[in-house]
Length: 86
Ligand SMILES: [Zn+2]
Image (cartoon, rainbow, N blue to C red; front, side):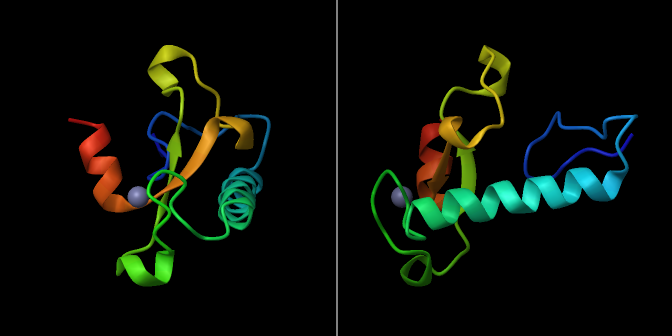
């Protein structure tokens, strides 16, 4: 089954076409990036300074019931994400 690379566990909704969900995920990522000013919301490094694209991170993880909504998502640099997961 197809699974979203950005949010593991996100699978297509049978009643919605796949393109709808891809557009929704892309839009949500852009919304979070715009809100954060394209800076990591934890250490404030700008995406252009980081050398790698920032990623969208769940504040409350999905396994703890966190939803993939903009108020539960943070724009985060890759380095910080690897630290948070340890
Ligand atoms: Zn950071």
